[in-house]
Image (cartoon, rainbow, N blue to C red):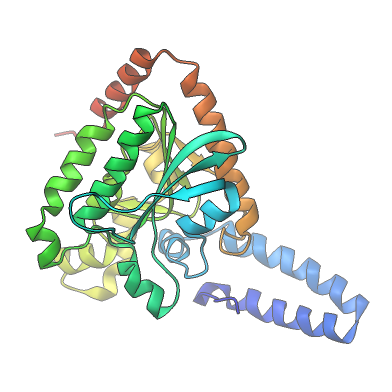
Amino acid sequence: MATYLEFEKKLQEIEQELEAAKARGDTAAIEILEKDLQKEVAKTYKNLSDYQKLQLARHPDRPYALDYVRLIMHDAYEIHGDRCFRDDPAIICYLGYVDGQKTMLIGEQKGRGTKNKLKRNFGMPHPEGYRKALRAAKLAEKFGIPILMLIDTPGAYPGVGAEERGQSEAIARNLYEFSKLRVPTVSIVIGEGGSGGALAIGVADRLAMMRYSVFSVISPEGCAAILWNDPAKVEQATKALKITAEDLKELGLIDDIIEEPLIGAHRDKESAAKLVKEYYLSAVKELEALDTDERLKRRYEKLMSMGRFKE
């Protein structure tokens, strides 16, 4: 059963009426309701606020990393463990093919349903997850395989065990090592990109965001709590943080925006996956046309040019 957000209630009503019309075979009503639905979709999704985009980025029906693995990869083989402590299910690593292009896919997986959410720790990796990602990336580098990274996490897990095992060191190590990888790297924010947990697999030749995804240094809830000590100011914090794809593209912090279906990736997973696949293959083709040293130089220059200030 589809999940509807508060601002999608009108869509829900029309879709329910449409289902009822189809059940009774009312052709005239079906035609009218389908037109009404198209109008309502355009009206609802073309004027979304930043907070509504945040809600879509966190939508429980939104495709997760494993959905993209199933939809765009074939002959995929999962890589487990960091060879130091354990296998972290919040990070997935798959070696396989995307339309014939050999690919190492690294993604953050949130999980659906209580059991899976607990298994995946709600998409919040421990340090061993980031070390597994680095191991997979180094393996890809060894065999000259491009890397696709899918970002979708509220943030790195802040628990005592994670800190004891070096959470900050694991993230910092990834930032350093991923900046030097000699293979093409493409990173895409498919949902929620939270803090260092997202940055740990966000250093790449190309960093893109899905239209309804977000990328932030802190969650809007955390920002509202710190600045105003008022959870009711989440919408204000969301707008102030500039976390949408449009804002970050304008600020020069991401390279591209992937146009997901107007109604959202959660309503059309196949089309969203196709767009991700096409973007990745196009980016890899462009990157592989460059000399390795030139590609590394451009990556370094891009990273060093980030950040602006004025007095």
